Image (tube, rainbow, N blue to C red; front, side, top):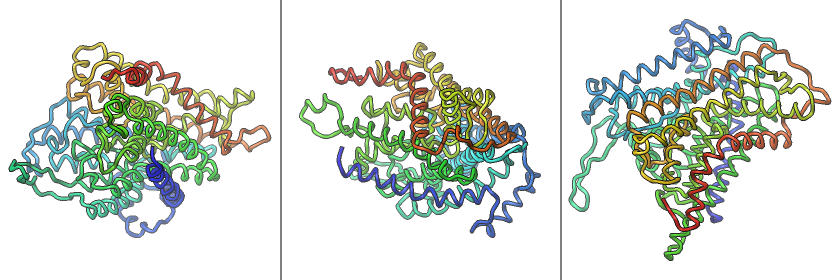
Length: 567
């Protein structure tokens, strides 16, 4: 590790913290229905969309109606994206003449982008036409991200309201998230990316002659616009197979910094939105501090492991850390930081190959996802995942002091705790059960590139990434097979909707409760003590659930590496 590397990491953290309050304040005004600088331009469009949907910003929904609206909208998006892929060969804007996508792969991709996972069992530039990239994948990048933000706002309303029967309107929340938050920021980001050198064109691929005289086809397309939303919406699906390691998706260190900030900024700002909506911004800062502790710990371990490198390589007289699978324009520090950011959020974009990380360096992205990506997380998704752990933490605190647990004046009772546990436990159900089946299924084992514990980690990472709606991959697993396309697709659906439904049920239950005034026995939830308790609960739950799997994967691989064996 170097001082220069840590300075770069601290610069990222400092800029992020500076962005939290202004963006949080703006988003609070948006979802509170207040006037914003964009209202005069976007207001008529917003009201027109409500008329098309047959609703208005004054109409609110019970949590069950909110959930049904969300599910139907996502089902429609899934079917449209599946249809576009299957009909790709007959549709326009296909200059490379790409054929229809295989049914199993089309199912996997439709489930992936609809759930904000963006797992890709294909090479984008060699499989998807411009039309599918824009009308299918990019559209889902927007609406799946807006869906996550809408759920987070609905859950926040559950804490902020008292004796209410509604938690907002899904169509209004999703429309405002898209129009006022995601779209304006993406327009600015797209222009910046084009300025930095990213392609943005509908022209055909370009043929070039290399210095050796060989003929090479250079893939182009509407890259900058997709990169903007894939990062800001924590989607992660790349236009190119190499994702953010491709120079057309990530030209230099400046674009790399902007992309890392884009991944975290909306999720981090939602903590400030929470504090403003419940009337106590300290609550939001306490949540962000909990996320920050886990994030810094993960960055420190990952950076240390990659900087230390492989002792077997050092024995050959080669100094330096582990640069395998990394871009020299980013180096070890920014590669490790990007890996932790993209898996702390449900983004899945990569600027280095996680399969080439050291055992412990690759374990940190795994742990981030297995914790439910509550460290900032996907836009909205990480925040409502963190709120599930907060309910468990205050429940544990209540047990320790012998009184009914409360959070922000709302009594946390059996229903809320059960729903929170259901949301938390659905992730290991999908991650571990599918992994257990795959490691004994010959056709599934045949897809791994490495044997031993590293091969096990490749399979575990795939199902972890799917259920956590992350989308990144170790890179050593051949996932484009019927088994992985179908099971990973199911895992993505489980990880998305088996968390969303309990979260909305909690929102409805809390909104209907009266607010209890704080008393001398009320446990303060904006203090360092609560931050420590929350971090402890997250780590303990994650450790009890996933340590056995990690022990036979990256932990064993690290011990074997120390003793001279690699896989």
